[in-house]
Structure formats: C-alpha cells, structure tokens
Length: 63
Image (tube, rainbow, N blue to C red):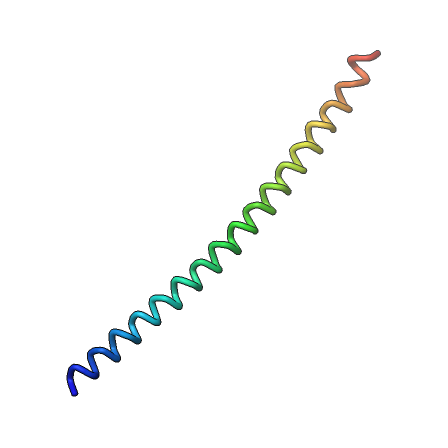
C-alpha cells in the first residue's frame, strides 16, 4: 500500500515537473519572440533616428 502510494506520488511529481518544463519552454519561446520583435523595433527606430540625423546634417553638408 505504502509502496503504491509512493510510486503514484513519484509519477505525479514527474508529470508535474515535465508539464512545468514544457510550460517553461513555451514561455521562453514566447519571450524570445517578444525580444526579437523588440530588437527589430529598436533597430528600426535606430535607423529612423540615424536617417533623420543624416537628413538634418545633409543640407548643412551640401549647402
């Protein structure tokens, strides 16, 4: 009886652990996607800023 309960507990523990791990994996992937998107957004912002700076400097350079 005790042995059976023990194995059931271990199985449950393992399944919980596995489920948590898969959840973590999903979360990490989601975070990675968000980070990639954020990075892309930052890069786009940076290019816009640098092009704006160039546009501001350009008239002075070519005048």
